[in-house]
Length: 467
Image 1 (tube, rainbow, N blue to C red):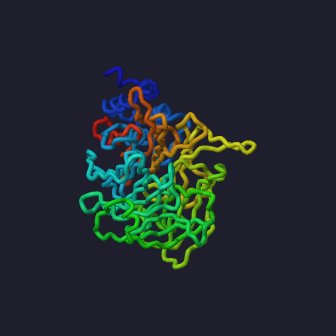
Image 2 (tube, rainbow, N blue to C red):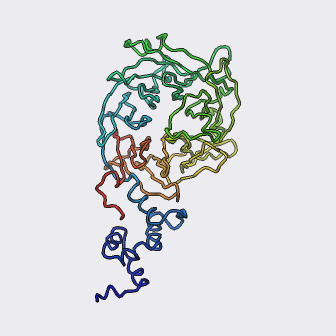
């Protein structure tokens, strides 16, 4: 009889406790007895603690081995592809609702649309504004036929920049601008309300102390524009005020829209897109221009079918200094980056450390999930926008020193730190996005002009799995 076959379970457990993940998996394939011992929870618990720390708490219905497999084999931590089609810093990236398309934009004034697949391919590219103007936000409509692009353009007054929301058609085989409107507030990025309607802002002469949020319905007449100004003056957009608030001392900067049923705990929006219901919740971030410590995230209920302008009070308010926010694909969670503001004797200071916060939209009074290791800037006198993202299991947030932090939502521990760093350079990461149908795929963009695709070992099929 082989001496190894006479070893008792405690001795085998002691020996196996020195093995790493791959060697323990290999030992399990040696014989039936070793296979049995290798499944002991104490072994996999110890390996999980080595991976994410001893504060990790495993759910009762999940084994430690399956948890470790999820963290190692199913997290998007392996660089799969790098794409270089921009000529300057990339500011934003997003998937379409189906996950078939990706859009990027940036300092070069270019909007790119990519086809997502095993290898990402550039489909369309359009220079929509020229230097020193730029594009800092893009978003697909639900039908994936049009994009909105938020452009910062040079105003008529010296050193003044204006905001323009432009609509680009993508279903005709090219990126074609079909509508555009000036925004009443240059930073306001807008969002889609329907396939042919986007949200914009304005200040009207009859109520100069109020901010009006306009539903802008466009009509594509098929004509090309000769200049951006001609496109803005085209009479192919109908506007209607859907919300009016008294916040003239604040700049509305970010906005997201969800169905009212999602807010009050109704049926799940599994597809992660807006339905045909006209009752919506506008999630607005308002940046107070004179008192930065008064910045707010506010939630308003609106009815898009209402014939009268709605003067409304928020249904919920959260005080924060927001540096970028995103919705989860299922519209259940809002994730944002924020930095604390310290006020002493009328002097304010922005704290260095950044907190990434995940808010459950079905009940915003629930304590948010907090993730806070990233430290993006040495300066405490300014803020820079960078957009995080959240999936069912993971949170990804970017930071100025070239690093994307990937957290596990169960343990709140860091799974990995993904780098955009080039030798001898610093390239701040601007935005990240999980694939809406596959959280094992993550895309990121940065100041290095590059789009990077990260995948799990499971998706690459080149990393040995835990068996």
